[in-house]
Length: 356
Ligand SMILES: [Zn+2]
Ligand SMILES: [Zn+2]
Figure (tube, rainbow, N blue to C red):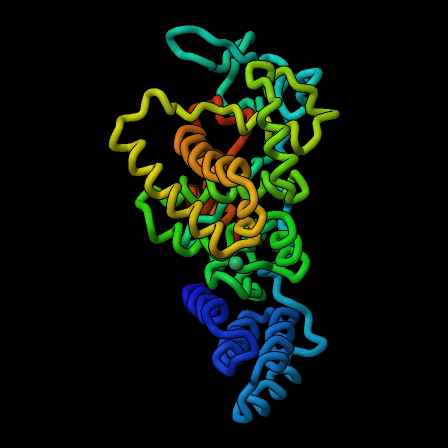
């Protein structure tokens, strides 16, 4: 598995159509052949040929192709029985992903917090929620798809822009670019190097990028929406999720606590410093530069969003874990995520997934 990760890094760092990338694909085809993943082996042979495959590899690839063609795959990547979670109690009338026994309360001691109006047992399932935004940790970027979070290090293809993002398919690559990655691609590698808080900072940036995509990439519409939003009326626990739009869901993330007033001056100064750099990089390197060039207000809202979602991620981000296989008990932390509802629990998310 380690060799695959290194080959994937080579693929992500090599230039499109280069001999180096063809060699990495060819090497990955060999790993797949050894693991009897013949379908994946053939995919890598095709990818190597489509890159600038050196003459000396042509015969090897032909031989590998003959060995892999029409062979049944090993069971390594067979779909495993999914763990189907089900709520342990009747769901909330407006929030189908949450048990009706949960309520959001507010008081001076705890601020906003969740209570249950019935006794719960260990192991009860009271919430099944998809994150609004999720960001792979650096170590997992070369073995998981950054869009659908599928674990498949055998056929990942790279984003051509940032060298640190890979996808399981052209479809995921194209959806990610269209929906959000176009705003983070040119910045994401620098973000992961500029701060010890890179998970939170990266999730904040990712949330901003996703939010802009939700407004059809129209910062003016986003600005008007946020300026007109009555934050006191946004409540994820009473909102009707059955009819909620993606923007309604974003509202519930936007109003999460930033703890701005409670932050130490040094902490706040560092965040403003790094947010200023990220803002500048986004203006210089993405299409947001020309969009904000003619409007100081749009420029300001972009900066405010970067800082706000960084702070929200710091307070409300949830670590996501997975299981390596069905016999493992050690949870592996692979992603950092932003939820609307689960953020009110003091917990970590568990993405139950068997990888190998
Ligand atoms: Zn995918
Ligand atoms: Zn990229």
